[in-house]
Length: 531
Image (cartoon, rainbow, N blue to C red; front, side):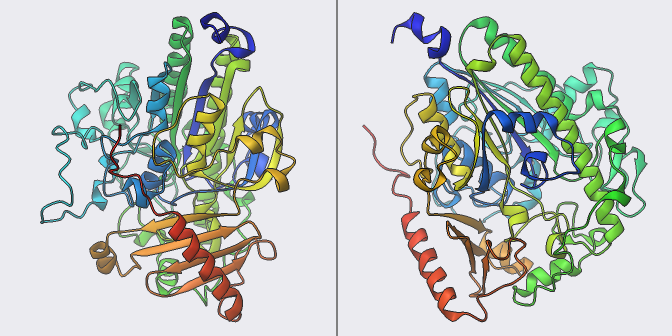
């Protein structure tokens, strides 16, 4: 292919818009069957692309799964097993492969590839580290919010492959990072923007039941969703003017709690109209005891603002659902603006678009709220759409994992991958999404959920769990405590009938599948010599 051919017509190297939300259940978009939340732009995107109805995370926590998406590797392979450690500075990512191949790359919004906003999870180790990588001082503190207190700090030219970075570090109404100075330049007030994660956070309106549901004291024009939207569009327009293909990672901090849709978005839904999940009253009789403890912990009694808790107040839950839907609809509006901008540039037919989330949220399912060591589809299943204008639209029930997105994009754009990618390319499914039986690339996928053993002991949690989801609909989770849960997702999509306790044969079969999956997932690339 000549240089001219590579930049003209259908043979032009595709752009990539990668849209990722935070803590977003698979079922909380219109194209997955939710008739209450209004997502017309995401639904239109789904109509143009392939909807992966059976998409799951590699880990149901922010940092591990975000690191899995960029590396195409399981958390146990890339090393970020929880929110208490940063992705290694030298880690190979699919984004860096695109940058090396000539794409302009940008990360706008939430990164969380480093533990800056989750330092409350860090339990320091007073011993010599396992490996001294000799990375430059400060490599793992670039996302520390205080670095931005006096201005925007110097930034490396290569941040895990991203050449241009503008961070929105925090959640809810709290504004830090590049987002802070963007908002200050637009008339925002420091005292309204840099707010605590507590009931003292200023607001125009707030739930009487839980401080985490409120309307921020500033308008929607300063909110993180608008920041991500506007700055992503700015990067796309600048890149288009330069003539090179671009890769924009548009990372919305919402709908992660606190639930703070601003202005009109706070009023989009009445809590009284919100339907409660059918599994709200699940007694979890055959689940580990720690899950029942979470169930009994009221959101108002959380250990801290981010801790898992229970749906102990149905009216509070309705308020949380209504506010969450408002944040999602604001995001949908932003996605529509991005797509319109790409269309105005004449590049829509040359742009691959991905929409997904880093993990889900329980939102009252099984009587649980938020996330964290909750091995149910609420946190483990995510929305996923891939639009490639060169391929037909459709829907597929074929299994897919977050780790599959990296090899998929690399193959679609004919960019070589790096060593150690464990995901599988979904390109065969994109070629013919309706023929899921013959084009499935997976017969199972695995989900890891880990925490450092010392931390787990202190919190009285199992330090490890592994979940296997098989293409026959069986879903099995084994905990390091020896406990387990087995569900048939075909017969029991809400996971309320744990069958392992009464069917030893099915439990043994599932356990054997899990062992095989864990053996297959062992990493043989980390630290390998290279030519």
